[in-house]
Image (cartoon, rainbow, N blue to C red; front, side, top):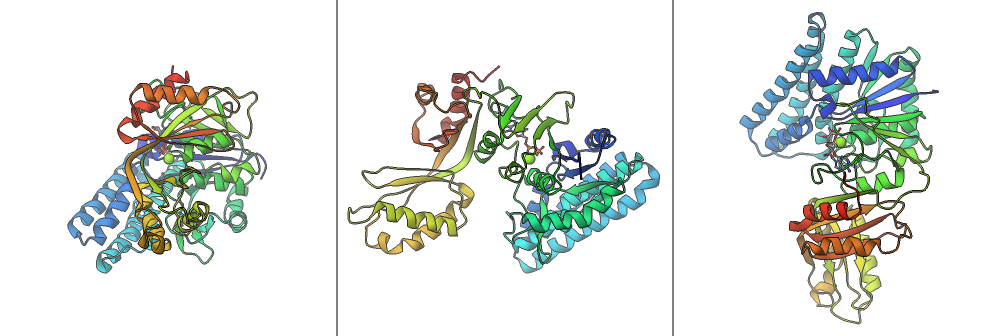
Length: 468
Ligand code: ADP
Ligand code: ASP
Ligand code: MG
């Protein structure tokens, strides 16, 4: 469909009746000019609440489970009563009850089993988005804009990696044609749940935490949208997380590659996989603030003319550094590395950075703390003989580290930059543990002591002249 716009509203932009009113207003304004699809996150903190409820259920904690269900219901019922006119309340209340009943049924099943099967978690946790989509669609209808809440499980086709599924684009396109196109042709505004999808045989999945950005980009690509607007709670993509660097500034424009580097290296403002589906078609993305919609926001585009130096600094705190070191020269370091990487790939552990030394044939890599145990398990199993015979030194793990990533297309071929960055960090007596730079020269990744992480972000941000 020509000229179609996709808009995504994050958790804070959907966080209360007032926020949903504003979001619906922003959607309505653009809907008047042409076809559009809205993608919504669950109301802020709801996904955390749902996951916490399922954990309580697994632990057999019935009292807390009931308390959480009560909280879930109270938050949405209150929003419903503040948002909708009296005549629309009964239908919306019935809809909310039915969805919470769906969630409660799964949670109680988990309580009985004492186990949390990943596919049940995915089905249950998508209820957060289904609730917010229902509220938004009801409110749009109340304002006289024909709208329909759509469960993305009917549209977004994924593989079966529950909790972190990947989209299957061709089947998604077919489902989009079947489900969304008829609505769009009737000028009905689809309000689609972010975060979830389903396998080809219909089992519910989710795309990973923060995945509604990804949902929106999957739909924008499948619909060949003209643009994707991502509404959040800051003025756009900034030179650093404003919570860490209060003098951070909003960027006018950045490239897909820069945005992806920032997201993969911890900038929560975008889900890491958001840009991939858009790149092929070059669909531009705007990151905008629903609390200040008059501000221009950041434009994310395939290319910018004459990029300038460093664009932004980001960081990740919950990481661990794993070192592998041969104890005997008889062992080929390259082979050990190959087998280690193979083990990590099979463990489905993401490598955030890797560095090696050719002399001792040792290498170290950075993983998320949440994936550390799995990484260790696979490595120790695959290299069990080498460890047992002392050909490899015992695995060394340092969990007291953090990652800083300095990102910018314009860093390519800027001499002296790395030196200045390292000096700025060292000036604060922060120990640099490892350094990695990809061959694209788009990012310098630096592993430092965890205790110095925030200070190092501010130091690099200032050294690169990024602050206000
Ligand atoms: P949403 O619920 O809208 O998806 P998120 O909380 O996921 O919003 O992401 C927005 C938050 O990302 C901001 O409030 C900000 O604190 C954080 N953030 C981290 N790094 C950056 C950055 N470089 N630019 C802007 N925001 C950032
Ligand atoms: N609600 C989901 C989460 O909190 C997805 C999202 O908000 O993007 O992770
Ligand atoms: Mg988010």
